[in-house]
Image 1: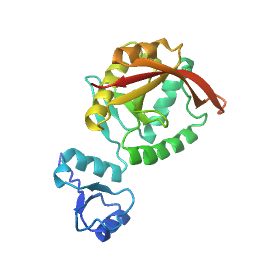
Image 2: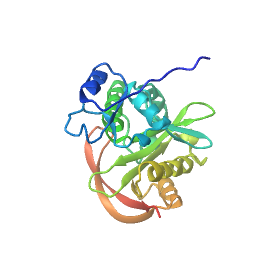
Image 3: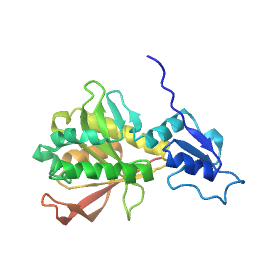
Image 4: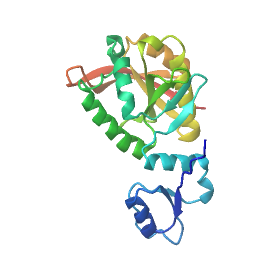
Length: 245
């Protein structure tokens, strides 16, 4: 099979960057002393040192411009990647069992709403932060078996680790495998050394997982979340914290 050329432009000109942006051509802005007073398009990928541009960085810039999900990391059994709209039907299968939503927010009642939410999430969360909740894909079956990832939690230090698995994939070590890899990714790639998770006191499986990962319980906190009726309610959680050495 012939190789596919993936072209990403590098420029130090605001005018050139604007042309690339208008034509949806992937590009990277090299910031230097000659262009710091120029105004570049919003959402530009910028570097100050050209040595920071490697094959992985180029691939991610290309993927973002062409709405191709990033591959985040992998484990022996799992591929951890960004979500796509095409994943939504599989998520509804995973969330169908009532036990899955016993301790977490459900999906939207109508798939069309979830698709709109997913599109906005990809654009606003992945596009702005570069991280978020990702899907766990089995390498063997290529099926989505759950979700896990990192999100900014206003008012708290560090990033929040979240996770869920479909019932058929629980008690097989997948959650620990995925979350361990995600924590390693956060430490190495995001340079983030503090994490938190908020667990219902009756959610014994998640408490056990957090403790196995090295999280320690802190305070009880009250947080708002959406219930099955789409109403915002306040619930109490135990805050668990992980600090990397």
